[in-house]
Image 1 (spheres, rainbow, N blue to C red):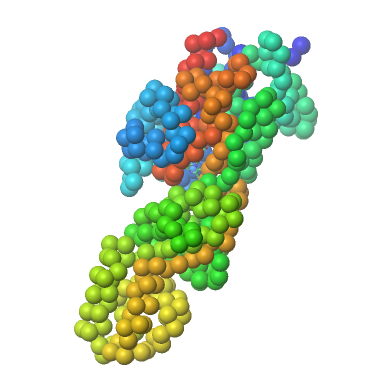
Image 2: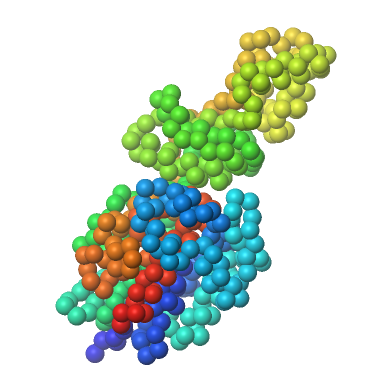
Length: 425
Ligand SMILES: Cc1cc2nc3c(=O)[nH]c(=O)nc-3n(C[C@H](O)[C@H](O)[C@H](O)COP(=O)(O)OP(=O)(O)OC[C@H]3O[C@@H](n4cnc5c(N)ncnc54)[C@H](O)[C@@H]3O)c2cc1C
């Protein structure tokens, strides 16, 4: 006889853990299967280990961060939104602080607090989590699902044994394809596909960008705040963000680059040439920058060119500017001609990087694409194709900008599925 459950949740990330807690009913047999050695690995590293759990944006603005598929989340967010999530965790003993950009973090800056609060709750309800247990196959007959599990710890200590269990409901909470070391390697898409679900195009999103040439490398670790970055393709502005970015050993990253990466990845997959144009003085238009340069030059005519750059730029940019402008650093300012002044203005306003590529899934914060939202009931998270099958979290074709939106979606979809299951055993 196979072990039999009311609900089996595949994946112990935020969406799966929330579904488990909310689907709880005494005398119902709920099991969470997690392929990694520990639950919530991605949640523990989220927000650089601090977990940006949600955002204080209002309903409309929040939804808009998900792009066109945001409408799928309207019902879930109308039932369980940002303030509900914060209160939920307050009741589990975790308290939050609000930071720049409307981002909420646990007061103690520790993502483990979030995971532990969920695990304590699960433990107190007596819900079982089996780690080292990877679901390899899901089959359905009229009455129940049979799950084949590759196991290196469940039931006995023999590694790589296969077991099968039976369950009435299955919740696929296996996440996307990004950061596969945390367990989400895209295998959930295959499980769903074999059950008849359509998977929309899977691409890395919120991903760092590789640039051509050596300039980014030379500027490695330099953070630029309050800059504006434009995505330009075939001389047209496609997208733009204002805020903070960082140079890396391969190119560029940081909040505004991650936000722009979805646009960049889409263009690159269509084989387009893409440029990133950094405006180092976004508050000043070209004529105003020119007036300022002229004034600096006139007022300091005896000083050298390098001293002008010092007044305008972070120190690590100075030598790169001197190289790119090809103006000797010790040239007296009185000798700077209008053509050189124009070159400097253009570099300040349009510091340009040609995009080489995007980093793949192992560096992506999130996956764009997934189970088509047309095939899921947005009020229950149940599949419209297979009865008693549910999808929650990042496996669904929803993805948002950075700012806590993605975790809110994982928790809200988990909450919705949990409520439905609890009331429909
Ligand atoms: C570095 C990083 C930082 C991030 N920071 C933030 C942030 O601050 N704020 C924010 O909103 N979002 C953030 N995100 C995104 C957010 O973490 C994810 O969107 C969220 O974790 C998705 O939750 P999930 O439950 O759908 O999937 P996951 O958290 O990916 O969990 C899925 C689980 O399923 C398990 N699993 C997969 N396949 C199987 C299988 N066949 N059998 C059994 N188990 C399986 C995996 O091991 C994993 O534990 C970040 C992501 C990364 C990579």
